[in-house]
Length: 147
Image (cartoon, rainbow, N blue to C red; front, side, top):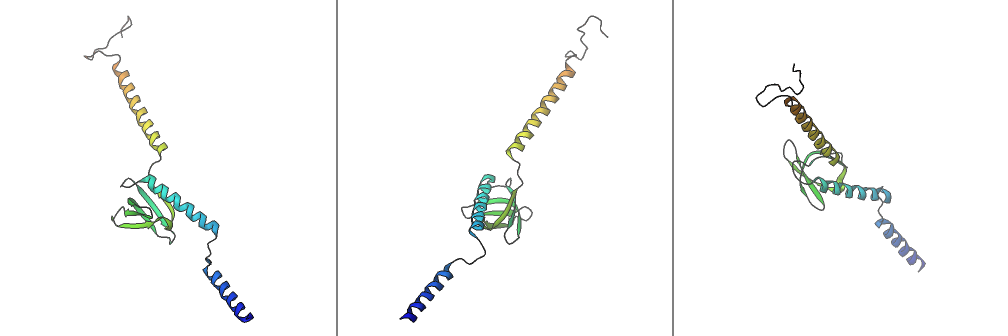
């Protein structure tokens, strides 16, 4: 009876320990991967689909992709190569790094303000040139001694 109980206990312990994840991944590392996966998913959703959504993706197996996003699903997204147009589905869990080549909102606002300022300066320079001339091109003297 003792041999049977010790054998049953040994088998039970073997079963319990064999079902435990013995990989080198700690719970902290797993939480980090889950957070990265959710950040990648949010970033891809923010960039959207189309040729304006250009990304550079690095995977855990060190492979790299550079292209634009053509499709987004819950489990993965599809990147089409910029040069060849070949598509590759990429799971969010495989991604270690991603970089979008798109401008941030602040950069877009800064460019818009710079363009508007340049237009205002050009218009004011042109208006100041035409200020002292009549419509037919003759100089108008406002003061009594005209040069």
